[in-house]
Image 1 (tube, rainbow, N blue to C red):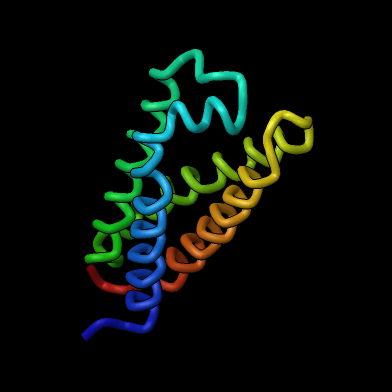
Image 2 (cartoon, rainbow, N blue to C red):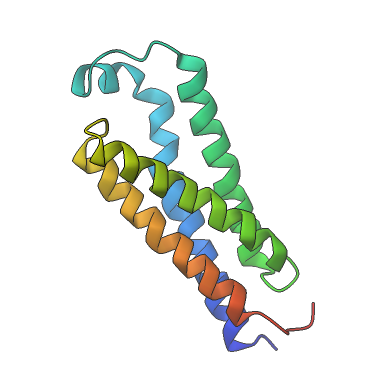
Length: 129
């Protein structure tokens, strides 16, 4: 029988992983569009595609956590770092005038998800694996 903490964690990580895949997968096909909507063109595509690839890998990790949050509990902490590092750096860039408002909006979503990941981590404390 799963506990309320494990159910909460499973739902949070499932929805985070699905949301992330929906947001990140299309970026593989949007390099030219990004160049016109938010100039200048991407000058180091390896960073762009590397970011997208690492992001997708994390979404898959979130889906794995959702399948067994108690057993995967320690992986929740690097997941928090993944969310907070994007949110924190984006907010810093936004305040410096180097990131657009829509990007800051998505960073705010990551901030909320990172906080939910922390809540899930603490709600699964003490549960047997």
